[in-house]
Amino acid sequence: ISLFYYDYNKAIWVEQNASEIVLGGGSDKVYYTATSPSLGTFAICTISKSKLKSESEELQMPSSTVTLTPSPTPTPTSSPAATPTPKPSQTPTPESPGFEAVLAIVGLLAVLYPLKRSGFKKP
Image (cartoon, rainbow, N blue to C red):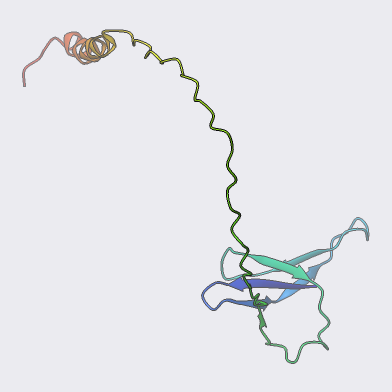
């Protein structure tokens, strides 16, 4: 098992050192651990070491080429003109009057209540 980390600064995949952790309780699960330089994009895969040219070989991202083929622009065909139907006018919903005034009074009372309890002591 190999863990590869994508280095965005160099735009390459770098293989990380992964080691198998042996836990008791059965052979149906295998755990691996690896240390990475930071969080990012990872890929877990199996690669035999004989297929790699060297231990420190870094894998390159495959480059894709995009070819654009021009397509002819369709010519519009004449269609009968449709008469637009008038939309009903929307009336704005009236907001409750005085909401700002009520909010200001509540704020003023919230400031005056502690002052009244302390007896308006002067410094």
